[in-house]
Image 1 (spheres, rainbow, N blue to C red):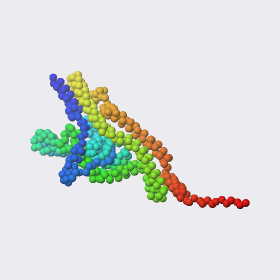
Image 2: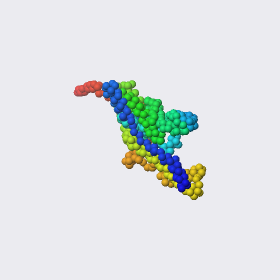
Image 3: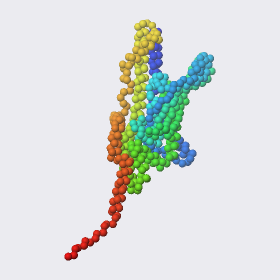
Image 4: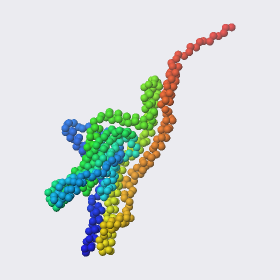
Length: 461
């Protein structure tokens, strides 16, 4: 009976040591931007007694996956060790911080498999989408040149911090009581927005969020609450700035963006437009018409890419939802694999202990666990497979990705034909001057008086 009890204890320790007792770290982000912006606007209405301006703009924006520039660090461990040693006398206070670097959470949290670079960017995409300030918000764009602004981010810090209380109770009881102090989660991200192709950002913001009373076992709750706090503050301030601009300002922005897209396709178009004021009136009128014709041709070429990117942006919500579901499924698969390996290890250890009549040594237990992991891999389906997108959306995404891969070649052929048919700036100006001269000569000849005809003299006989 004692042997069976020991084996049962070993089995339980292996199972719970695998993370079976921990709550699964599923990712389910819910924005608070819309509610926070609305509350802020209501507050301003009460203060100014006039309705707040709408932040709705014609801007099309995109959010790219973030960069990860974190570093791993552990501070306050000396005080924590000293406090634990003093626990036999009384529960003394201590505080420590754990900064997780890239991949650090996968080592510290058994079930954490989420890619912070993407899920943190998805959180910002959700906040911007729900703000109602933009005509379109795309996640992970195919062609960022089709957008007015591109949002980037750098993860600077993702940390947990804990500060325990002073509990004057001896024999480690006070230390155990002080452990009930909540864990604080901290997220720091640098967010920026730039024009497509530009290196210098137009907007820079140091986003900092935290959760002061989050559960240590439910780490994802602290991360989500921290992101909500930081993002909501950022989007609220951004909304105020966008609302302060007039409609005429946004029309000018759209006109300037159209000129920039045309210049990116054909730098000669802007040069031709600049040449108009220096030409004679007749030639200038011809060149001005040619500039408009070229603009229509360039807009038609650009419209193909714009339609494709708009279709891609329309799949953002479905893609984000599917990616989060896939990430959660991978996490659940990893969790199930660890639990399965622990159960197998417990059963194998129990069988081996019963056969030998004695408990396993630590080295033998490690060997059994490695064998159990290999055995459990036979039942592992390899994590989240396939796609969580609906069939129609999946086909649409695959088609758009394929079209984007062929877009550069198609655009090159169209531009080559465009240049061949419209000519360079020098050719257009020279032809316009020649046509103007010909037209002036024809007009001069048309206005000249007809020659006077003299009567013929008849010879006298």
